Length: 286
Image (cartoon, rainbow, N blue to C red; front, side, top):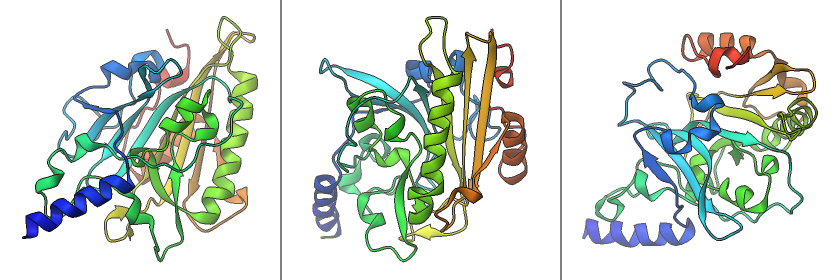
């Protein structure tokens, strides 16, 4: 009877959260384009050749494109224990002219391949219901924001719960949203490739906290973002970083803009030592 009930519940949850098309892989090789020079960040103990594959899952996020062919849109390292992403990596090529897609949230079936036989469905990832009627005032906060997408298809691909962390509502709609706008404006002016087109590699991540949403999903204590790009006009490499506490604060006074090196020092102090987000720290990248 328990398996029958679990199976019915799994079907109901699947109807409320459509399945995504992404791939859970052993490496990021298939979607290495979203990392600077194809090299993922160095996060000792979490993302190294001998990382804990049972806990941390590498996801190449795939979605239908304009020609109705599936293509990779961005990459995510997902923590199945905390049920939140560690980071999402993407290429910023300028904002597209489109309306924000509707909130059709997707889940990743490969993270829970035998969900129909489980007593507790989706034990390895968050689901839409985790965010309903929560006591913390949490919103679903994007790591790769849809506002940084170049087209509507890429924007739609960001609406997967493997790209989402719980963010306080005021923070999500206020300070962090302001950061997304500011960083986009900066990349539009400072990141131009040799063809004079906007191009930057971006990493956005979350540091796990001590509280849980719905007794399941970790609520991050803080958020971070960094980008690295080449400025062909000035003939130099450019980087910028941001860090903020995830708290109920609408204005952007809690958002700290800093250098890449300063962010890595914060991450090493508050999270994991010796983090290196971009190859050669985004200096003279060959």
